[in-house]
Every structure is written in C-alpha cells, then in structure tokens.
Length: 227
Image (tube, rainbow, N blue to C red):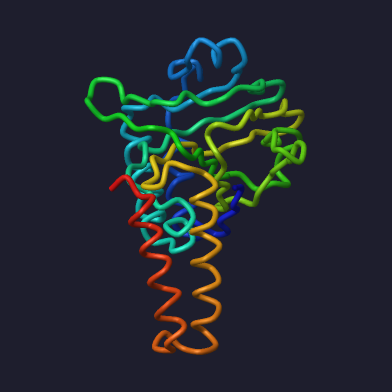
C-alpha cells in the first residue's frame, strides 16, 4: 500500500524545519546504515542525536499526530524519531530493503519496521533526479512529491533513490511500527475506514448501517491489532 499524504507540514512548519536543518552540520549518511545499505548509500545525514534533528523531528511528530490520514493509513503503535538526509549532485541510494528492526543507539527504544516514510522538504522543481523508486507487484513506481508532502510505503519493499543531477534533494525519513502487522489487513482496514467516512458525510454517523459498518471496522481491528 502506497499512500501520499499531502501537506503533512504546513508552510509555517516547513519553514521551521528548513531553518533548523539548513543551519545544521551534516555528516556521512552511513552513520545509520546496515551492511547492505552501506554498500549502496551515498548521501549526507543530520546526526541522530543533534539538537537540530531532535527539534525538527518533534515538529514532524506533531504533524503526524494531527493527520487523520496518516493515523488511518498507518495505525501507528510506535514511530521512530524522524531522521533527515540530503543528496547533492551525483549522490544516490541504490536498491535496498530497510532493516526489519530499528534500534535507537544508546537507548532501549526499538521498533519493528512495518512502514517506511519519506517526507519531502525541498521544492520538486529545485532539483533534478533524486526520484524515490519503489518496486511493486505491478512494476516500479517513481515519486517526487512537493515540499511538505509525505509518502508511506511498505518497509519490506525494494526501493532506491536515483542520482541527483541538479540541486539538492532534502527529506526526512523514518519508520512506523503499526498496530496491524499485515500489510493486506492494514490496507483493507484503510479502505473500509475511507468508505465509512465517505458514507457518513452523506448519511450521517447515526445511520443504522453506518453504526453497523463502524462496528465491523473496530471488530476487525480488535482481531488484527497487536495492541
């Protein structure tokens, strides 16, 4: 399930994040890489424990909690603190699969990575190349979203970032441990919830069939949720 979340960050939030990360010091992106990723990754990253990363990440987390679309699509149990990367000319990230478990260094915080998220922070016309390419059962799909927009996709998917040929690609990335482990079950719940919201807008939440459908949604969530 690939879901684009438009305007996750408001213009004011985006400006705050950019002010923080643009003024920060960046390091080699392989500081957080596993063995496979280290062979494929060529980019820069904000140090995970830096003040800029923590503050900017807090803004992103606040935006996530305020997004009904994100909550409905991800059914989040835990969110890994957002990280930030940038790609200059010639930099890229080859085909890889994200690690199944992410552990925050120096802490006991760990998550199962059910979903990956890329939050675009640079205007899509300010750089060339740098497309996020995700392999799906229907073939490859390329994404380059406007600044402030975010893409959710299965962490189990093979994906890559193509080489940047002009400008700088800037993004936040992180992982979500969902209450519903199975991607297909999560997709069915999202489709059902979307239909419920659409019908409710027309018939109202007190309609008897709406009450029945809402009950079906929550009973399925009880059946499939880990928490």
